[in-house]
Length: 107
Image (cartoon, rainbow, N blue to C red):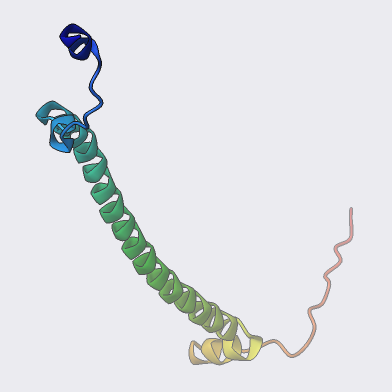
């Protein structure tokens, strides 16, 4: 009868710390560490990209307003009255009579 008792399996719960042995913890650390490093790198990279995007947006708005002002200046400078004023300073006058067509006889 003593032999029968010894052969029976015991269902005593194991100590929870025994299940988490050192090698198992090391495996989890080796898996978690690269994931954590990648997560931090990805966050920093995204923050840098957003900062650069905002800076480029500001530059784009500034260049857009500069383009509009330059187009306005060109439009004003190319008007006929403005050209006539600038040419009058140099001694050239605007033609008030229409041009005449010269016809040459063929011999």
